[in-house]
Picture (cartoon, protein in one colour):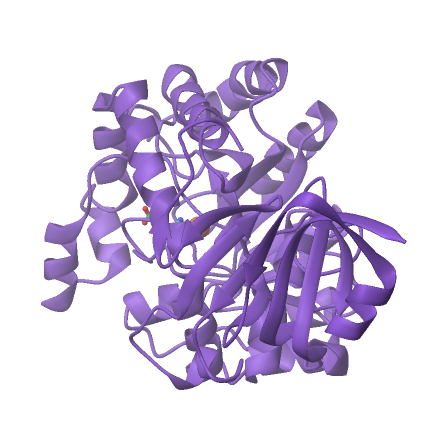
Length: 429
Ligand code: NIG
Ligand code: FE
């Protein structure tokens, strides 16, 4: 008999997502569904998924265990948001209004707005203010079903302020149920004071900031914005090689607006993921096909910037790339914490099926942050991270718009959202 101390009993459906990982091609479109499903855990790890009869036959349930009635609810793995710019200060609502009047994202950047606006605000913010902002955003993420999220720095662009952002992520992660995977993105932009001497900033990144971030164990990944007007392909290669040598996993923002070869480079250096791909070329797609580098698509960006161009999701899936969906939550190009909304954009704007979008937002997202053995699907041995949605079937995730179907969230085998409200204390889970 398996021992269990927590069970979600009698769900209308349990959708497990991904028996294997990563999911490619036809496998991305498959989900396993248990009608009247039970999910049990022991010590925060899943030990059983199946029906009531099997539960009674196979599981010894602790007398003082927690039993939650899932009647009428749909259980899914917690969403894994593999790309967020969580620790920022201020907002860009004014610039958003300018964009609605016809300014483009690049025109704002050329005028010293865009990312630089958020850099100014983030540099001014205290560690405490940034941590509080992170915690408020994490609450919204959790209420929409995200249980694991990546979080990037990149609005500090100097030693002290990059460390401050990463410390805010660490501090927030310690007192919030959403599990955070930190990424150092000191190469998100060129700091204003280095515009005429970019090489000096690259040297600073390599020789001072990267080693300090590693020394303090503040980030697992390094990320860079490889884009016209930001970092060239050669600069990206130099920084990525230095980051690899320093022990970081690699991520690259590539082919968002102008394709520079960043996708091909990501595959070549064995990056965990490459992000955006709105302007990816055929060569980039072929490089990704069959590679272990995950293509993280961020449909919030094309939607928010009102771009006609979209990442070629269908082509990437059909070619054999590992496709994930993430929010890119940030104040300038995708101001949403909701992975349900992102999943819907994946369906409506990228042409994914509901099953493909769901797997892309869970198990393939986990692959993008190399957490696929721990989170991203409901499977024995993994963390009991589960979302319960009040809807008739899982198809409602994309069918019913403009509502939040998530009513309950379980993280590490503890109920942290109940009836749509956070119920955790501020003590670390
Ligand atoms: O992923 N593309 C670069 N970075 C972010 C945008 C950040 C910002 O505009 O503040 C992105 O879209
Ligand atoms: Fe981004």
